[in-house]
Image (cartoon, rainbow, N blue to C red; front, side):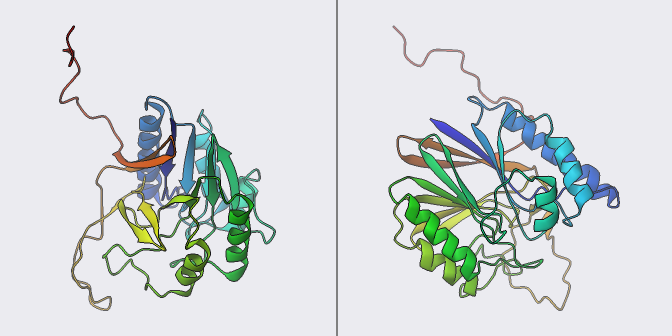
Length: 274
């Protein structure tokens, strides 16, 4: 059995934002502690973007300090709060494609993981023709190898209208055209939305992870973005991560809250007696 921990939306800041700086770093450390305590320990950590808050070099240095003692290999993707140039300067070992996008593939056991770059400005996702051509070629290189796609922006809607992108956004259509019918794809994992939910896109399971930083409130009511209505947008609920299990050709995904919680029941009496 292979396990992978997915973390996302870390939003590590520098000291110019004291509250966010302390809170987001502490929440990330809480998540990492929970991952380290998993049995068996995950083979890898997959960080799917918004690693920092403003894309600044000192934020990436802060992130590197937090991760310095990590004993689990970490594979990075980037999101709309990241900046390619400063990310690449801070983490030069992370591969890029021929056009400089943070896109690459790697193997974990018999599972292939393909990281896609959906950074396009500061808000919505993007997946241009160059990135789509790279993904099409990369999938064609291993059509019979079980594959997991990792990207920051989910191509499905959550129902939280102020965060969702239109279903006909060009980048979603372009991505769908590439992955539709690709039976080696066992699922897509994403971030960006700061809460866990799932759906289907182009015939494939999409699992969105909760954030290590603050969480998105679940409010499905209509909203007028021109008129503030005092609704809760983000909450201080527990940080979390996804645990991906790959075993005998089957993919299972668990949404995991992070923190120290008391045991409710412990295993003291055998279920089966001789």
